[in-house]
Length: 435
Image (cartoon, rainbow, N blue to C red; front, side, top):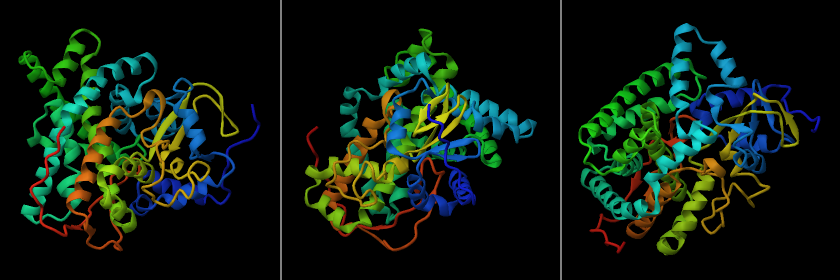
């Protein structure tokens, strides 16, 4: 193996910028791209304390395609998890361990046979037939939300639309009451702030929220056990549990993943995506001229450009060469997916948003065994949303495109907090498409 080592910045400026970004300080979340540029310009991955930071497209692609060497258990084991755990007091360590133990049952945090089994069962939610069945329902939700925004004088696209449509879609898929959407959004926001216990206050709040949400899901499961004649997805998942394919905790964890994973990523894609389109007027006009013909390419370029999942983590199970350096077993790796989608070695002029670009090779939904389970649903919602907006509101505009916008959540799900828009015409009775 190569004897090269990871790059270490002698003046620690990258260390501090990474800390602010991973701890999701507002200014760092608002614009992580200068940091990404500097990391991409380095000759090798960057060693940040106990964590190896990887930003290049080819390095992240190597990791994505080798789930044996690069384990998903980085939140509970490895150099970074050990360092965080060592800095906690006894009560905090209990919270850390309980959150890590429950999250280890997530599809996205498991490996090998366990991952294959959980993914195979959860895939029942995202078959082509289910996506086809959802298409008309999602269009009806889009029309309903836009009409409600007009009727109520609502101009914030995030509050009125992008934070609601994804949860409505996934709740319908799982037969979860739509009346519970605001409660679920609250839990999602609290759990989403924690990423591996780096900030103790966020860890403790996430632990409390996770326990509350776990109790909520347990009630749904109990209801379906009392009414076994239902035929929805929850019943199908429970059938898998009753057949001893899923433990009850695995069933609860799978529900959490489907509800959160099915909403947070798409909320970011829709909100950040419309913000990008409306602040690149030439690109919005291209879409508005031919919504049907350009929407697919637009959604792929938006996925590349805004990267709804900005970061993820892995831990090595054995020593390996990555980016020309030797990485020992047990090393925690931070994957900057948002940086990889701006890698100039892969995308010409990567900081330019271009709806006519062929962006399909982006890593926004990852690759390999851990390709995003809900990618088909996210694409379905995004295509229907941006096509509808471009058809019905070709002159749609941000109220103040020059204003600095606030961002919420953490860096992993970097999401615009509000987006005030002007509908330049009244909401018309929508054209119903054949499906």
